Length: 253
Image (cartoon, rainbow, N blue to C red; front, side):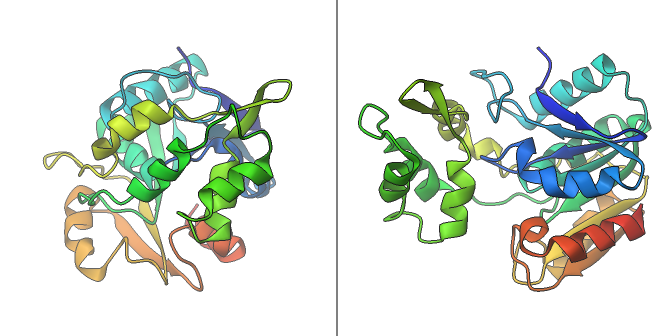
C-alpha cells in the first residue's frame, strides 16, 4: 500500500512528514511557499494518520519502508526531507537507512535521543469521544477541553474529525493502534547509524525538545549538521513562527 499524499508544485522533490496525531495537510501553507521556490512538495500522511492506510503494526522501521515504497512508486531519487517531531524521527531513520535517496535533511524540534512517553492525556481524551453522542465539532471540543487546556492543541487534534457518513463523525487516526504502540513514538535512533549529508535541526526557543547537550549525540549521527533556534516558538515552531521557520529552511536549501 502506498501512503496518501497531496503533491503540489513542480521541481525538486521535497517531502514533508508531520508529527504524531497530525497529517500532511497541517503543512499546506508552508508547502505552498516552498512551491514558489521551485519545489515539488509532497505533503505525506504517515501510516495510521490522515488519509493513509490503517495497520495493526506501527514502528519507525515500518514507516521508513513506507516512505521508501512511496519514493519508488513516485520515482523520487534525490529528495529534500523535512520532518517534525514524530515525522522528524521518521525522516532521521530514513536518511540513515537510505542516504543516497536524501539530498538534504531538515529535522524540526526533535533529536535522535529517546524521549519519555508524554501523550497519555491527549490519547485518553480522544478515547472519550463517543461518536454515537458527539455529533458536532463543538461537542467534540467540549469533551476534550477538561483534559487539554490549550485551544491551539485542541484545534490541531480536531482536524482529525471527518464525516464518515451524513451526520456521523469519526477520527482519521487509528487511535486504538496508536495508543497501544505509543512507546514506539519516543524511541531513539539506532546507535550505529549515521548520515553524512547536510542536516539542519530547527528548535523552538520555548521548547525543551532539543537541548544544547543533545548536540553531542546529534553530531555522532549527523556529522554535517547545524542547529538553529526559532524565536517565540514552542514545539509547534512551524505553526507558531512560520515566517522565521520558512526563512531558515530556505537559507539552508
